[in-house]
Every structure is written in structure tokens, then in C-alpha cells.
Length: 424
Image (cartoon, rainbow, N blue to C red):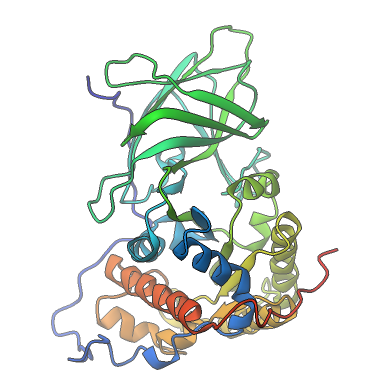
């Protein structure tokens, strides 16, 4: 029996518009692709701060641990999961496939789900996003929540829409608000019968389901058996297998800025459950993309620093990598004057809080390089977002930078990273 069909809505956050005829190309004939990209500068600065991540990778290689976990949080560049998917697949081909990781089914809130995941649902779901300050909702780690009051709703997810990497799983971590006393959450099989599994309730916002055998898709049913029961609120889920390898959790939200992530009440608790060895933060575009009267470098830096402190409180030893926004234009015509202040603030935070820094703006070509990316089919004509190919190139660059840190680090036991600033 086929899974239930719902009102699947896949809306791409940006249109991939074809290049106009005659657009100049400066693509090189060498193995590094594009002349305007500064491949020789593709490195992670302050790499000594990545000690914990490097140690985890080497323990995985030497079979001293089973999983290395990366959590990548950001805005629309991450929600679409093109950049992070490209990096995820390359890392997992190198270090092993530990599972698909975190997924939020954005179709439930009428937004774009990653193109590598198939989502279907039934029932009525109401969406909330932490970028809207008019909405007083509960928010999980991603800043998105989907709520159903229906007596019977369902959600089907297939993480194998693309064939680059096969994601089966025998563990499901459900991020939610509410008690299972209020809603009965059932795992269904293809014939609509419940599947068996051991449910482990960890907290009011995280539950784990362990399956007796691996599956390649997920079908959940949410049942309200008593009319007096309230609602079920979903913050996302994570799919993991029992094989040694790397998990790359991609957590993004269209329009997100540093302040909006501070509204996520369950961020700390759910990040702790994901137990990352490396957290990558890709924010700043929406913080800078605003009129002069509203931009505040100090406010941005304070909010971003608060995110770093929240992360370090949950895991003091975790490696943190800050990435800078790429070059962009406002209204396709004006080179935004705030972006360099945002980049400067991120660099200052990397030094103050002992984080790695991946300066993507510099690597992509610096000021005004967005024009080259558009002319070569790597970015959209909105001069902010990238094409699928452009995000793939970014993912490859990030992968190579991470790979070079591990290969060039030396022995982590011989030299530690600088001590982080006190998070209190």
C-alpha cells in the first residue's frame, strides 16, 4: 500500500533562472573550475580551535568511536540543503555514512523542503517560524514548528529521493512539544499496520524510537484518541543508522538571523541531544540586508555571541566553525555596504571565542564577485541566493577546507587549541 498523499507543497526558495544568451564565462580549463574563485585561499583560519573535531575524526578512522556528529545551522542558504548536502555526501564518502541526520518537513508549514527528501502528509498543520516576532509559539532547534489539532494526521518522509547516498535507519529521534499521553504517535508500515520499536522518552521535547530492523522511509501517524486532548507540535526529526560514520545535521530557516535563533526555547536541550563534535554557524546575510537606519553591527555581534555561548554551555569542548556570508547585492543593483561589517564582526567573534573561521566571501572572490557567480550560472539574478550548481561548488569548497584541517593538524595530543572565553 502506498503511503498517504497529502497536500505536498514544494516551493523553491529561489528560482534557478537560465543565463541570458551571450553571458561571458571565465571558467578555466584546469581542475579548479573558475578563475574568480580563490582556491588557494580556501582554508579554515584559526584551525587550532578545531582540535575536538579533529580528535573525533581520527578516533573514527582508528575505530575508537562509532560516530562523528556535525550540526550546521543557518538561514535560507542552509534550509534548501544544497550546500550542506554536497558537503555531507563528500564527508560521508570519506569517513562513512552514519545516517541522514536532522530533517524538518517544511512542507507542513508551506515552505520549501530540501530537494533530496520526499515529504507527504495528511491532516491540517499550522506553521510557526521564529523569524516572525508576531507569533508566540514554541520553537525547537530549527526555529520552525508544525502543529496539528486533528484527531488523525500523518507524515511520510523518504530521505532517498536522490541516489548519491543511500540513507537507511534503525533509529528515529523525534523533536516535539507535548506528551505522548496527549497524542499517540504510531510508526506505520506499508500495509498501514504499526511497526514495532522501542520508544525511549528522554525529555518533553525529544523522544527516540529504536527499530528492530533498518528502514528506508518513515511513516508516522498522530492519533488524538480523546477530544479533550490538546495538540501535537513537531520540531523535526533525525534519522540514524547503526553503522560507524559521520552524521551531518543541516538546520536552516529562510529569513533567519542571529536574533531569531535566540527565540528557540528548546535549542539548548535539542542541541545537547544531537551531541555535536562540530557546530557550523552560517548566519549574517539577513542581519546585514537592511536599511542603514536599522543596521547595528554591535547588536548583530551581541546576538551572535549569545548563540556561541549557548552552544558552549551545552558542550564546552565542541569545535565551532563560523562561516561568513558571501558577497551579495540589495535589490539586484546595490552592493550592500553592511556586509563587510558583518564579516568583520564574525572574524572578531572567531578570535574572541576561539572558533574556526571559513571566510567564504573572500574565497568566492571578495567584493562584487557575486556578478561573476551570476554570469557563470552559479548564482541567481536576485544577487543573493545561488543556483544548485553554485551551492554544490560551495559544499565542495567547505569539504576541502575541513579535509585540509584534519590532514594538516598534526597530533592533537601535542598541542591544544586556545582556551575559549568564559561563557558565563
